Image (cartoon, rainbow, N blue to C red):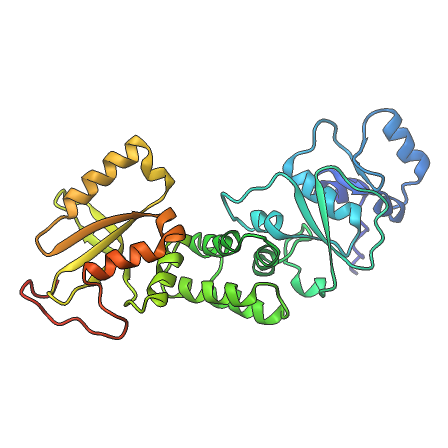
Amino acid sequence: MTSERSAPTWREVARAQEGLICRRQLAELGVDRHRVRAQLNAERWVARSSMVLSTTTGAPTRTQMRWLGVLHAGPRALLADLSAAEVHGLQRWHRDEVTVLIPEDLVMDEPVEGIVYRRTRRHLPSMRSALTLPAMKLEPAVLHFAAYQRSGRTAQGVLAAVVQQGLTSPTALQEWIRRMKPLHKAPLLRACLTDIAGGAGSLAEVDLARLCRTHGLAPPVRQTRRRGSDGRLRYTDAEWRLHDGRTLVLEIDGGFHMEVEHWEEDMARERSLAGQDRIQVRCTSRELRDEPDRVAADLIRLGVPRAGVVPLSGRYGAR
């Protein structure tokens, strides 16, 4: 004879929600308002909003703020955008405020400090992840964030980040663009994902791919592995085989390359990879973004072939 599993206690529910519980849940678990008031008066619990209580005292943690956002809005709310992406593992895109997506028809009685609520007509259950914390799946979360950014670069940057960090693939993101139709900035996001699928691992490399497309240049080979004169394996940002058989190497410097330790390491790296059969040039990520025509003119002058043209073997031979 098997016994039915007993209903969870308020302690078990709160423990699963990082110590937070909403008044609706307490009522469903048989904890009346008089007992709640007694816990608050004794300062064992803290009211984090009109709807949510904390069974722990002290400043709320980041994880508790996420739970606060969704519990305050009710069972249909989902942690969204970068807040959800952070839970799925996205790094270096932190925002202090927690973003929560709610149905358009939901009535909210008050704002909650530190929480941003965004309304949507979209079907939220289809975008919910399998996490215990009610949150959007990674792909719709980052696409929803990207779609509403004023800056197209920010929108493209977050897509490059989630793929570069190994959290998802361009194919999965393209599929979610289709599923979320209509989606703001969809053409831009699709084009960006096409470049990423072609090997662009950063926003600067996306800019380089776009530069080549705009100016009719052959796309580079990215992240070529080469062994330097010091014996270390290194990866180059972009390479083209020229008509004379030599290889043009373009290294793209971000802001951190200007720091002394990176600057000296870059110079040592460049020397170790130098050879008679290789031309090495550099540009900054800012130049690719703001002065692509100037960079393209230099690449053309240095002999980068046109798209669709196969370079002939020159006197330096194949490498």
